[in-house]
Image 1 (spheres, one colour):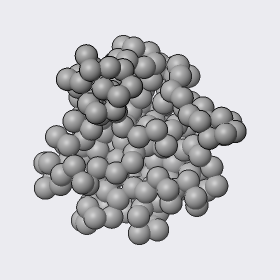
Image 2: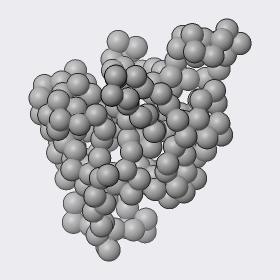
Image 3: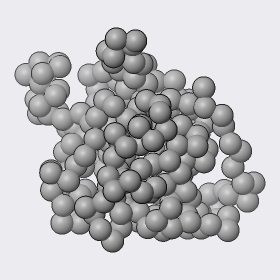
Amino acid sequence: MNTFIQTSTSRNPENAVQDHRIPAEKPWSGIIRKGQTVRIEDSYGQQAIDTLFYRADDYAERYSSQDTMRSQGAAYIGTGTKIISNEGRVILTMTADSCGRHDTSAGACSCESNTVRFGHGTKYLHACRDNFALEVSKYGMGKRDIVPNINFFMNVPIKPNGEMTIVDGISAPGDYVELVAEMDVLCVISNCPQVNNPCNGFDPTPIRVLVWDSEN
């Protein structure tokens, strides 16, 4: 179980420099400057928030799930985790976590994976890879730039034999993570639209993203 680190008492929505409410099933992106703290909030509970990070001035450097897991010797993301890039540098550090379970192995849902897992009737349902493709296109990137992501608040137990399965989330309304940027970072989010497995409690809901400057 990850240890929750209390946030600063001066950090509240009123003094945030960015405050974004992201509707259910929609994407979002924004720049987090070095030293700023980003809070990703599961406003209603049991909502998977698929997230990617890119170096803001060079998108070729981006989040690496493999390097992040290897560097910390753990399969999950939690308080104290160093978010590592494909160049081996620290992009962000997670400083607070009120939930305790975040996946970085199961990837993002797609039309193709929906079809394989849930049948041809789901082929045309909206998926996270669609959201990611739409959002990264704003920065001149394409599908090849969508790498394995973090699934904040998604509960994916891993069995001793390596099998994984997506089960009911454990996040409560208002649960959040906070990360401090160690460089200027482009954050790209898909507020997961999945309705065929329990990652969203079969009911996608809105989320919130807040950003504070380093002195707060």
